[in-house]
Length: 251
Image: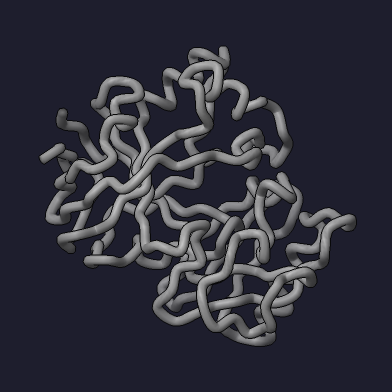
């Protein structure tokens, strides 16, 4: 079962923007570089800011609580700043590590976050720790054929950005990735071991182009496969550079 790597996606600020890139160095036991480096905590977070260790996703701003966040895109600049764009907001370029830019980022996010939810509080970062949904340093792996099958069942084209994945593969049979947990893959110069399926939440019900819910994704997944799984988590066990077009081989 050999496929081809077609998309590499990172999300520098958790739940706030996605960015496609052409190549990345993977390191043993680490996430995709610059993926979920920062996150924005809210006033009901169960830790004192600044954050000192990984914390559960419920402590942060997320697309499941604010569908408008799903429409944000990100672009990292050469100087380390990040430009965020949203169809209803003027673009913002900021350095999430600078206090003055953190305040600007929170102000930029306020109109996209429901007033009924605890307000955005602070930009968090923990050196060497990805603020992903899982504490383990996973890279997510998804299939374009499965996405196409999902779209056919829904009767519409479905954006891959609903799923906030890292690595997208074409050339596999639809749903073949569901048999991958426990197996190893070679992608470019790196080797990954597939750990477990990804259980999805209602954030996937939102169209990333508009930031509005338009599809009962969880019902669709359950009807097709009997669960809410889409994609897999994998661990990097041998580091190396990956590049668009690399073969993805099951070892």
